[in-house]
Length: 267
Image (cartoon, rainbow, N blue to C red; front, side, top):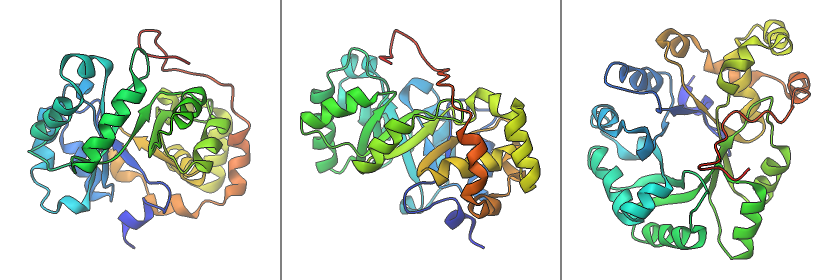
């Protein structure tokens, strides 16, 4: 069975996160590739694009993989939107384009101005899609009222912060949703109810949570510093879990937000 097909549906896919990638563990990207993952989440703020370059330069067919990247208020103010995009492309083995470019966080950003610039960059072929990260439903409604059409929202979403109203809004507006911190920084592995469901289904907690995200039309960003965790995750099980088993997980929401900093957030 083609693993890449299992990891991508018409609305969502498993994405490999690169925030913690460095020169000593760049092989994790290749391990994820061998398991069928074809999308990679990056950012200028992660300060590791030079290491990721060592991975991307070995991939021959540009159409076979997708790069997601993000720029912050600081990059926008000091380098400008276009120069920031060109910097990402140069650092990533002189890529021709970025598949998805996001504003990393909302605080202090002129959303309309920047998103209009991203539309120009799309027309120029430097990016394929654009969107925002760590934005609220209030932000999204305001952008819609300003006739801004987003392609993607990337936010913290996990069993303890399910963001159902936000996710449902995005589904109605045809905005693809990506989940960062999808394992709640490890809390899912300690939860007895999640453990019980995983044991009942004979799947790992990682497999269960990835499947839960995909069932909600959300693309989870997945990372592990343990190569065996990536290798041993059986992605064929992800598409086989019946939605009825997610009911226990749906009851875990407590609106627990882990990633929140007044310097960049407006939650």
